[in-house]
Image (cartoon, rainbow, N blue to C red):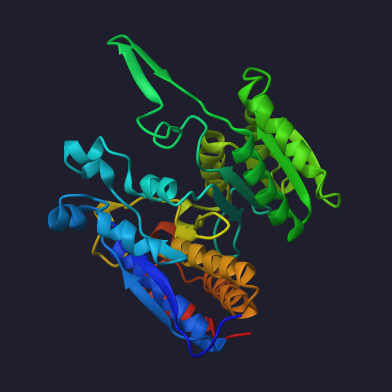
Amino acid sequence: MNDASKPVRLGLIEGDGIGPEVVRAARLVVDEALAVVGAAPVEWVSLPMGQRAIEEFGNPLPEQTLRGLEGLDAWILGPHDNASYAAEHRRAVAPGGAIRKHFGLYANIRPARAFAGVRALAPDIDLVIVRENSEGFYADRNMFAGSGEFRPTPDVAMAVGVVTRRACELIAHEAFRVAASRRKRVTIVHKANVLPMTMGLFRDVCYEIAHAYPGIEVHDEHVDATAAHLVRAPGDFDVLVTENLFGDILSDLAGELSGSLGIAASLNCSATRAMAQAVHGAAPTLAGRNRANPVALQLSAAMLLHWLGIRDADAVFTHAGERIERAVAATLEAGVATADLGGTASTSEFTEQVRARVHYR
């Protein structure tokens, strides 16, 4: 239980492009929500990452940032623009992926829902994609050392896909726990018809874990059929659990169906640590113009508070997260939005509207 006399320590990593603006917007609404519910103020721990870290430390993810995160249980990560880094830094693992691997953040939880006031291709969408985050075909995180992608000759490129029972068990448990708090339906997404060993293992282990959750309805679909089903009838889905690459693709599709990647939140977590990170990128052309959409990271921060509430059995964090979610939804419903959603609000104007609505019940 949270001790009101003891500040909560959370990391704050601004990143590149619009990162400083959207991270500040997320921090402001977290501070406001925690104050409203009577929680202790956050002690924010700022840590460098991205281009500024390269300029100061010669590394987009300096060792002091990883050491600083090791003393924290949760943090907010801004977007990074590694495509603009110098060649030697572009060849390295992207900072976000390196952090996920270093701390074993095996679950990437990505909700997709339509909001009143935001034009959505699928107005009835309300689902969560639970994506395995540590292996699969992602070459930057499926090996202990080195890369899972290589070229034995100049004309041949190869990739190794890694699927382990332990990782499948962890992500399946996460998906069923999420479903238990929602509409109690899980769809296992795979491609076992053409990858019978790797995807077959993923599917089968998920079904094995399902026995521990008898109240949850479960079925499976091939990933290509799932993509078509998402477009045709997204309201049919509740929680989808899938491997790394498939989850990345399907969650971007679901984000666009719900209105925009600008409202697509996500949380990377293990049982002991969590990182709020918006799905979208750094949008360098918008940097410093006060035009960035802060919704995705604000909702990601709300997910972070929910995670803390569940882990610590502390309803204060849960209530603060719920207030942020309601305040963002109410602000959008009132027609307040940034330009990418057809509105005229600046980043700071939208954030002030959310802060005001955090006080509403």
